[in-house]
Image 1 (tube, rainbow, N blue to C red):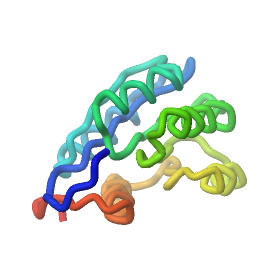
Image 2: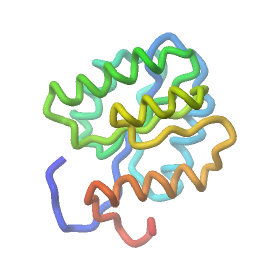
Image 3: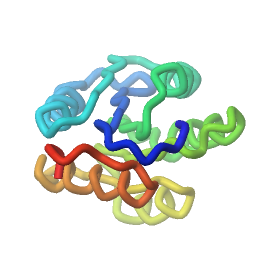
Image 4: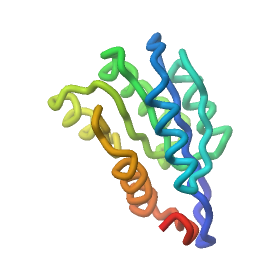
Length: 146
């Protein structure tokens, strides 16, 4: 995303990769982010890493939120990160939500995932952390999000 000093709404793409068909949590998070003032694009179920990355680039997002409950996070999330790097889009941050064991949270963050949210994370903590991730990356958010 081109850097600008102009304040704007953060753009977040939320998607489900792999065969996981449980999307209620992703939809709840997408709605909470929208209600917090972010522009949200929801890609729906059964996305491939390629589809998710291509949509993120096409939509010019700042952040990708990946919801994954299938246990395939150690395979699919690194593919998303590698595709972002290969397509010169590493400026798009990634966060993950779902059933992620503590040890895997550490390894995902070591790969470059900005944050991981597990069941029980409050919507306020997620929206606050998304604001912080974008601020850390130099996105100047409009005042109504602060």
